[in-house]
Structure formats: C-alpha cells, structure tokens
Length: 188
Ligand SMILES: Cc1cn([C@H]2C[C@H](O)[C@@H](COP(=O)(O)OP(=O)(O)O[C@H]3O[C@H](C)C(=O)[C@H](O)[C@H]3O)O2)c(=O)[nH]c1=O
Image (cartoon, rainbow, N blue to C red; front, side, top):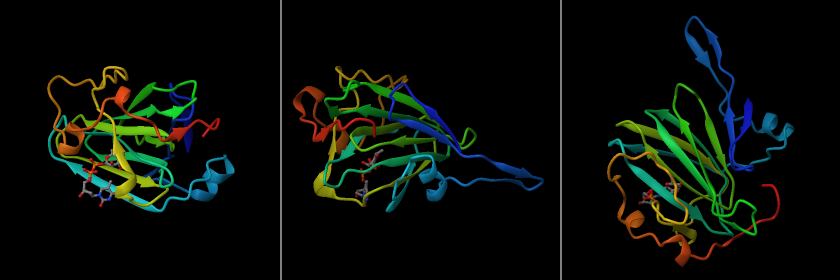
C-alpha cells in the first residue's frame, strides 16, 4: 500500500499494490493488520456504495457529528470523481482548508478522510460508482452538511455548469452560519 500525504496533513491517499498476471490483477483494498502496522488503526463497521447517473453529480459537503463521527476510506470503482475533504476541527492549523484528489478505478487511489473533516465528491463521468468504508454506522440524527459552494471555503470542484444536488445539499447552511462539532486533538 503506497501512502501519500495531501495538502491537508491528516488526509491521506492510500493506493494498494496490484498483483498482475495473464488474467488481470488482484489488489487488497484494505488489510487491517497491515495498516495497523503502519499506524492506521481503523475499525470499519459500514461499507457504502453509491451510484450517480449524471456527470456533475455532487454529494456533499457532509459529516456525521460526534459521538457518531466517521473516518472514511473512499474509492471509485466505476467512472471518476473529484473527492474533497475540508478540515473543520476547531483549533486546527488547517481549519477551513480543503484538499481535492481525483479517484478512478484506473489509478486505484483511495482517500482516507478522518473524523473532523467534511467530505464530498463530484462525478467526472456519467454512471459513476463510489464505494467507501466508515468507522461508525449511519446515525441520521448526527448527519449534517455545509454548502458545497460556500464562498469562505472556496472549494474548486472544476465544474463547468450547475451540479446535480439533493434537496438536502441545496438547503445546507453556509460555513459562517454553522458551528463545527469537531475539536482538533493533534494529528488524526
Ligand atoms: C449516508 C447514508 C444514507 N442512507 C440513506 C438515507 C437516504 O435515504 C439515502 C441517501 O442518503 P444521502 O442523500 O445522505 O446520500 P449521499 O448524499 O450520498 O450522502 C453521503 O455522501 C457523502 C459523500 C458522504 O460522505 C456521506 O457518507 C453521506 O452523507 O440513503 C443510509 O441508509 N445510510 C447511510 O449511511
């Protein structure tokens, strides 16, 4: 597993090795024992899979608040996405800063988005599928979001037109009107 930093110190890119042969290739997309050995001790309890038919579908910026906060390991198994994480841990030196990484089945990249970060993605092709592991199960009462196009965050989604959004995302609050439930406790 290749582990790379992004422009946000605690958001990592994990790219599993691919073992090729005449049939194609095999890859371990997650191995808890190997990851614990390099200091990534994550107990995933839920796997998610979403399909977005239209290019330019934007899901985000979302979080699940404590005590049900989730670390997420995100990968794209069909199509392509620009995956975005925003540090919203009060007291973090990177508070309000974002990073974006292109995930495709071809590049095999997975984005590790820790607790305390907003998460969202925009699809770069039609018929895109995203699969991600979470370290807590779904808790609707703790589910929250912030505007994808918030002017203070200034995320560059690379969009050429209006995105396809859910009603929930259309109604999300602005960053300045929102109080983060997360506190920075040093490196994730
Ligand atoms: C997140 C979730 C949703 N649902 C149900 C609730 C709704 O009936 C339906 C769609 O939910 P939602 O519109 O919140 O789905 P997304 O817009 O893809 O939300 C996700 O998108 C961003 C990228 C995330 O990181 C989060 O995992 C999550 O917020 O699935 C469940 O049953 N379980 C779940 O864990």
